Length: 487
Image (spheres, rainbow, N blue to C red):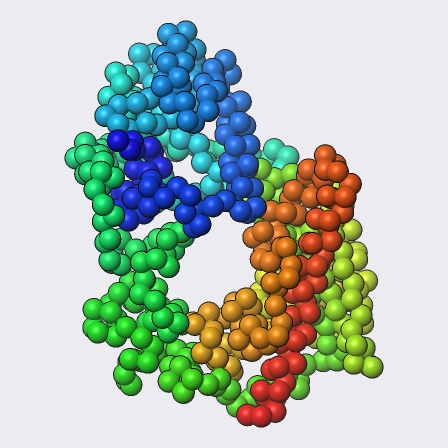
């Protein structure tokens, strides 16, 4: 018989399909961990270890997750030792197994503390704390207070504020515990029966990160959920009205201009180009340049003045047009774990010295230049001059162009293959920004422990990815010129 864990219980409160799949299909492709998720797990472990330092004298129950009975036995021994705190305390009751990040002794009671690497409370945190509190109390202990221990968003390295904040969620947790025994019985029943097959519905609202999202929603490239800026609740409302495809949308619904353009493009099965595209492109200052940053964000900051999870640029690719039609390319990637901001900023200022308009895709580069300005006030002037020259291509595309293959998204990974199908990332080992960020962190903070050939190969892969981003913008702008001239 399958057991519940705190993670499975939270999944069960969200959706029975999710509970069943994550329990019975643990090897599903959607659940496999890539570099980005592995990096997130490592950071979570680091946060947990630092949180334990706030409870001197505590005892760690260090047992592999697969050895549940052993973990429970070692927890009993730790409780008998009168340790002031027990870390990863394990409990098994009624076919529910939980581990508690911190169980702090408080007289004849205990404070149950769930440590998270987030800086704010998430919806799943409370049911997570509730199931732990329930199982611990079913095991015979008294829980006086239930807390969340979160990263302090106001913390700045090295130590302007405490790294952690403790939040008392006892009242909310107790409220969720009403009827929890029935919830457990229901979820265990789900696991004993065949796949529930619940259709998409209200349980999907807010679950944008569900790994099985594509399994549940009806197939089709132009399903109504792909309508521009249509969230789950609105998509469900359309479906209840019998509108299942973008092509089904009647006139007079008050759609946004972008959504109307999307409907026209899908109905015609052709790219739509609005007047004025060429005029905007023609107003750009020469020589045109193209800029892309890659960043690293750490739960526990490593450089001065940085907040938890603050993204810091550590790499850029910059291309600038030459009079002969070619491009000069400057690329920069940090070396080692030292603060990269000054070196990157100086290289960027030098590269952009003669630029006209500097084209980017999304507002991210603007944000990162501001980050550098705030960190390096002595370079604020030249960095501001760079920022003033930035021109974001995303709003331009959104306001003037729609291809049916955009499927409601204007991300470069959706726009590029639709407009420039010959441009691809398929030949690269690093193919998206989340993986790039995780691999950059591995290179910077673990590179000294890598074999030289592995470190060099990873560096080449990261340079190739960032360089492809700027080359993709060159190709995209060339295609936009063609579309503008033909419109």
